[in-house]
Image (cartoon, rainbow, N blue to C red; front, side, top):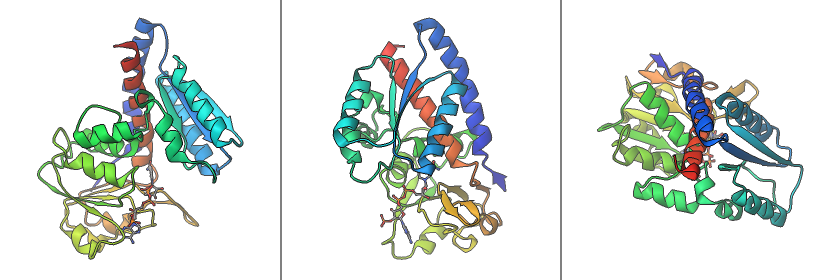
Length: 285
Ligand code: NDP
């Protein structure tokens, strides 16, 4: 069984980016800039934001923090408009979820699509569905990058994606089923209304779990030799646990991602990749 080491792979991605960013900064006279908006005091969001800022530092990207203990919808929209105009800012990341009372979709819609490094703006979602260049959401793009780095090509294979959220399951299913490198899979998108999820999984050469339920995918649901990617991050009494029951699944699978140290670090690395892409777009590199 191969352990798909997202932590180590993300480190490689960041090192490669650092070299590229140093060269770009030398040529264009400024570093790529990522504005990070955090509203409220959700502890998990604070950890994510800190990790993203650290990754920026590693890659030579300037992180431009906006930590607000609270904000009205109007204030937040004002800040986004300001960041849209700021030429130092190549990417805008608004950490989700926003505190209750704030309309996240309305805020996301306001972000300049060319600065939408999270890939959540409807323009980028539309581009993705058409297979056009544009920013792809970081978690699914990070998953695909991890597969690429391990030479695990889902082309012509059966893939099951569990979960149909707009940030993970749906875009991942779309990206896997499109043509192009590390894609061309035959994808089944499963959710809470899927009639026989275990049977769907047992058919799959690749399983992607983005459910939000600890240890949901068990060994008996996995075909011998399958590749299992665990997107889940669940905070339990045992600590951080994925959506995959690692111990039983590792007995059947050819490759599995651990939690932590799998998809999580790849998501952050992808945010850095997207920010550098945004910079290149803005400077015309
Ligand atoms: P959502 O809660 O938005 O979506 C969960 C999906 O799972 C839904 O589509 C839901 O179906 C489906 N689901 C729930 N219960 C079942 C069930 N019993 N059987 C089949 N499907 C079910 O979650 P997210 O997509 O935002 O996140 C999923 C997981 O990934 C979470 O643990 C989250 O913390 C983690 N995550 C990790 C990231 C990373 O960087 N590693 C980034 C983002 C998320 P339905 O639509 O029918 O309700």
